[in-house]
Image (cartoon, rainbow, N blue to C red; front, side):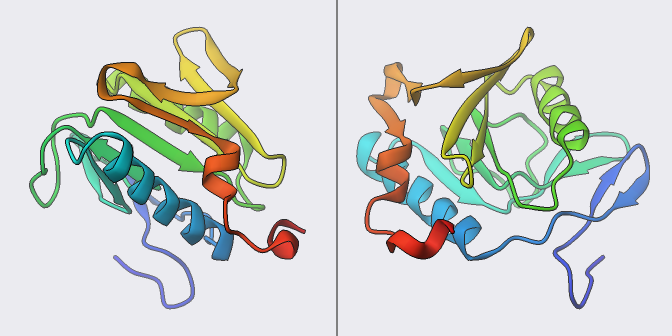
Length: 159
């Protein structure tokens, strides 16, 4: 289902849920992740924005960026290596945490959260969210900092 003035919905517990409206910084960060993963992993990883994933019966989510170690089918039913959520101004903390927990329980090995307004990187695990200096996949040679993500962005873009 699509909305004229909103991004595609997600199906959660068999119920359609609206997604937060992405803004320009959202698109910038998605592109930055795609480029950085391509360069840093020697093209061994595929960072794809807005790919719908099928978590199970009645469960479809759309991570801001999903990272795979292979090129996935149109609607992946197996967990990606990484999911990345980029916070928008109208995201609710509870909803974001719930989404991170769903990815983790589904088997996503690395669940990352980026808050551009606070210039904050976080990693989700069984013990919850933890701040991180960098988002890393050492086995693939990937280390991404907030400075990497924001490089080249006009100074007033995060105001």
